[in-house]
Image 1 (cartoon, one colour):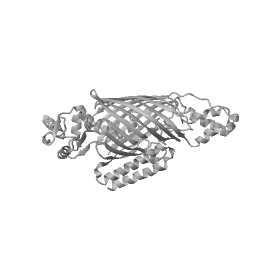
Image 2 (cartoon, helix red, strand yellow):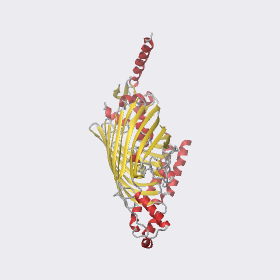
Image 3 (cartoon, chains in turn cyan, green):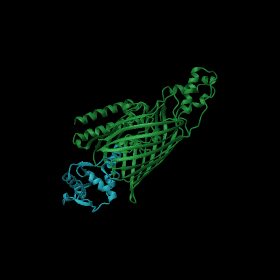
Image 4 (cartoon, chains in turn purple, brown):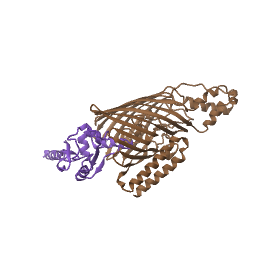
Length: 138
Length: 435
């Protein structure tokens, strides 16, 4: 009988880790000439180091409230509190401003659709034909 | 909109304050001009779209105490009071507010004002940023106005404790330096190099600082090279400051008096010390090397610097450095920090007056204090803990043990009636936050 709670706990763990393992699509405007993006270039854009695509054009990163922690964990292998501390340095030393935070997938897609330089992330299932997927983060 | 107008009024107050203080040099006028420009543009844009504006902030609420009343501990020499056995809140506490305006993809502006314990002009000295930032392409950035000083690795974010693991930047390395900002320009160029990112930055301008009783104005130039690769970041920098203004209460009277032939008739050779009581004309060279590693679990950082003033007695040549290693366990970070700082000043024998007049002897003592007590000689070991207990908040506790050498306590708040202790324990705990 003692194994029952452990089993339930393990099942819960598997269930919750599946939640975290959802795939994220990194999306850009369909007019963006790129078809893929290197992970280190994406890190530079989202960590305020250099806001440019590999072809030299300006990138405007967009965050979203619902997937922010998950996105940065997948991108950098670091928990969100480390990312927040990192960004505190960047923004309060006046080096760069943090990405604008949108509430959900639909808002991110509408901004990326409207801005040629915008780059964002959404759940893979939400990505529509109106945007171009550059990278899938697992 | 009401918060916007509140901020506008604050900006006007800051401009007015800066205008009244603009007597110390023409470059100083850049600040109010930049502010007015910023304010005008902000207002113009804001009338159409207030979403370009954002207000954010950071802060620390902390208590700091030591095990002695013979000397006061302070983060750096700009603080007017030191922590002793009586715990103090202002030593490590601060509250910063920042207003950012993003006009378009290329042009933005930032104003930051930090409420903290500070000597001198409360509004002007605590205004750490008021600049326009222009990024015509991803590789180039130019900032103009009041910009944060960037001569060492933590120099441009010393107040933002949330950004680093320790309670405060290592005091051996950062304590002697009063410069938080300057009025001028900086230009950054970035390159992708191999898998990493190389940044070159040059900056120049004028800094005016008030620390202790001393007002110091200096023109300076700074350059640094940063290479970031994976979990590593390295930094090499060279800066140079040339002091053009240096004053302390009754300083001119003192210098005039010891230069006068009448006084030298009864106090032979005292005039040779007149130039040593002012730093005007002194060039200070700062060379520094830094390296940082952070893989998410382990973190390490070290910096070393050499400050060459031509061995001016008021800021003798100084070598300093620190090394820190930390390990994260879930939301906890445990760290240790070792710091060392040593100056290489010469000792000067102040001549005796021919007559033991009490006023002359008192003046002799003062000159001796100024010229022979500017040394820094300290070492420390620290242990600390950071706990990221809530989103955008961190709890910290730190214990530091300092060893202080003879004539080595310039970064501390000395009590002229007591000789400084050889060893001091400093305890501190607090909460950092950003919003």
